[in-house]
Image 1 (cartoon, rainbow, N blue to C red):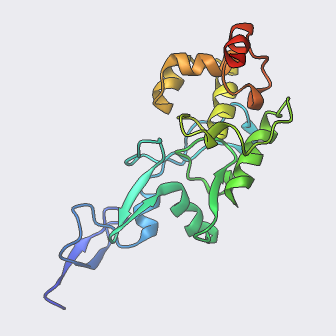
Image 2 (image 1 turned 90 degrees about the horizontal axis):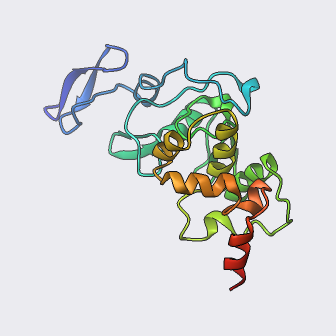
Length: 206
């Protein structure tokens, strides 16, 4: 064996494998072990699309946007993309779009491959754009917004299912007021179809 490699035990499957000495503390023999050993296959059923069945949430580290992340052999990966890639392959220029709108979900059949525009169109289709506004002029294309179109669709569905604004706000790393603005129509009304309050219309007209 090369002096630059050592025998280690895989954290995921307990099997032994040869690894470079520079590899970090958490050792996995393969990408599959690195991903699936940190996925909970008995997660919640999405309230707005229960026909999909249970989500498989990532239990490892997350990034600032709430997506699962992992490091493997020097690469920083998003967990849901890695899961879909392992299941069916995923082109580098394609997105792993969530049908369940759960950023942590790694269940392959809860995702589909698509472009950024495909992802946005899917979000809009779930809550029709009542004003027929061009989807490339609003929402996440505004650099000031912390939420995306899919986030907004998920927030509406989860509030309708009874989840509190405080809990949802904590998950999306925004304030409860931001959640309230979504559900009241003050913001994102072009996605939700909720009529914009009069005070918001007057402010927008100034």
